[in-house]
Image (cartoon, rainbow, N blue to C red; front, side, top):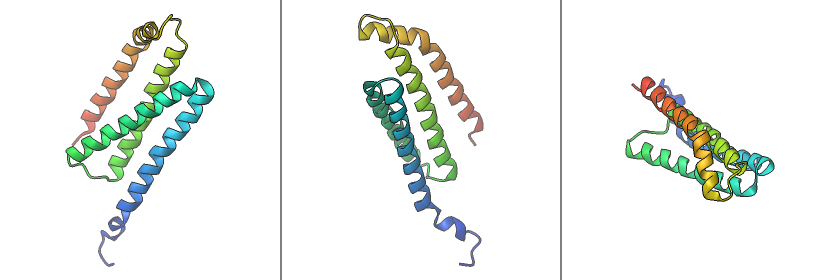
Length: 133
């Protein structure tokens, strides 16, 4: 109890609980808003895509040996925010497209939003590499 590191000994269970609850809350809020504003089908696709983003980030963190700390939990939440942003833009553009079939609307969505979202992803990755130790 006299160690200067004592406040950090018990932080991992709290961090795991915080990270999981924050990620589940972000999925829930996104799903409700997309159901209200776009459609149930888009919300279902969005939830699946968000869970795949979270799973991918968690697996790469485990493979690279990155422990769950305060900084990495913030990175997980940033990944959640970016995935919600990209999913919302793509779903909105797809469901408001004027194509006659789903294939035409996908092409129309990627032509109108693909470049902007690709640039956003690239700039985010470059920003992360710039702040890595």
